[in-house]
Image 1: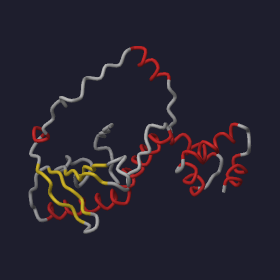
Image 2: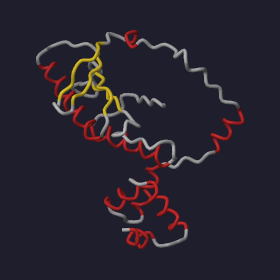
Image 3: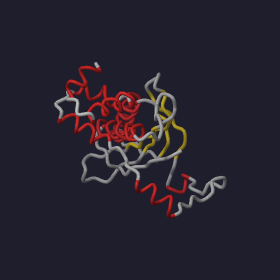
Image 4: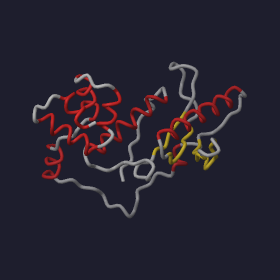
Length: 197
């Protein structure tokens, strides 16, 4: 299992979704995992805090746990933003907390409050030994090539592909690999896509 934590770098729902889609593509394109949200192979926790402007300090942070689709991520952020805005307008104070999401009801529910970092109960996992990477393995890992999906998308835009073609190609790794094999054989990109359609 790998946990990735970002800084509070996102200002819009669109930025969050695009980041997560790119992360999912990165994992898939490099044969790390299928990262299927609906099958629980990738889980998302979103942290939301509201503020009036970028000059203001961040508001109280609320984490919404275990979201399993891009649509649900969008709805969870929209709902939590609206919930926090109502609390601020009513001048109601609330603590840092973790919430669950009931997407059928379109609402969230309190799981636990977290007053400060100590409430997260960070401690070493006794059943996981320390990971030591020797120099030989480090060199091998550093020499591996990582496919960057955004570079592929940029390349496809240069071919003049529309969004529909690009999404079709990048959504299925096998189709993408087949397409790239044909391109390596110097077959004209648009001709290749039309043959595959």
